[in-house]
Amino acid sequence: MKKILVPTDFSEHAQKALDFAVFIARRSGASLSLLHAYHIPYRTSESVMASNKIYEILKEDSEKNLADLQAKIKKEHPQIEVETISHRGDVKNFITNKANDFDLIVMGTKGASDFENVVFGSTTATVLNNAPCPVLAVPVLAQISQINRLAYASNYEAHDLEVIDRLCEFALIFGAEIHVVHFVEPEFDDFEELIRYRGFEIVVKEKIAYPHLYVHKVATEDFNKGMSEFAEKQNISLLAMLTHKRSFLEKLFLPSLTKEIVMQSPIPVLAFRSNH
Image (cartoon, rainbow, N blue to C red; front, side, top):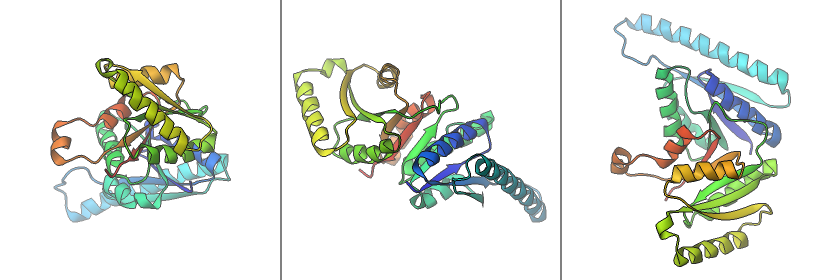
C-alpha cells in the first residue's frame, strides 16, 4: 500500500476517518492525500462577480483548514508524507475519477450537521459503489486501538477468492486474523448447505496461503443482525464486504445492503468493488 486518499469536510466524523488513515499509514508506510472539495450547493441569484468572491472565500478556508491538518500530522508523525488537495467542484466525481491513483480511500460516514450527514453520507455511498480501489468507511464511534481481527462476508461466489487474497494483503500489515463467514437462513441450513460450506472451506484454504485464516458458517434469519452478533462474539475490529454493480432498476427499487451496513455498523467497513 503506497497512497491513501482521505476526503474530509473537517467534521468530527471526518477526523475519525483521518485518525484511522494515519494509523494505517504508520503501519504500512503509505502517504496521505487530504482532499477537501468546495462548491456553492445551490443556485445563486447573485452576480458572477459575487459568486466568484464566494468561491475565493471558500477556497481560502479550504486551503487553510487543509494546511492546519497537514501541519498537525507532520508534527505528530514526521515520517508520514502528506499532501493536500483543495478542489472546486463535486467531491463524488473527483474521487471516482481519481480513485485509480490510490490504493485505499478512507472516509467518515456522516458530516457535521443534518444537511452534511445527507451530503457526506451520500458521498460515501457513491464512492463505495463506484471507486475501483478499496474504500474504508469509518463510523465516529470506531476504536483505533488495534486492527487484529477482520471478517469477510462470503456468499460462495467465484470472485470471493480474489477479494480474500486482497484482504490478506491488508491484514498482513497488522498481522491480523481473517474470519470468512457465510450466513444462511435456518430453513436452508441443510446437508446440501453443509457440503457447499465444506467445499468452499477446502478451496479457500488450498488457494489462500495465509496462516491466520478461518472459515465459518452462521445460520440467521437477518443478515445485519447475524453479522452484528458474529462481530461482537469474535471481537471483530473491521468488516470487509464486496459491492456489486447494480442496474438502474435495482438502484431504484432495491436498497444497497453494503450501504445499509456501512451506515449502521459501529466498526469500520472495508468495501471491495466487484466488476461482476
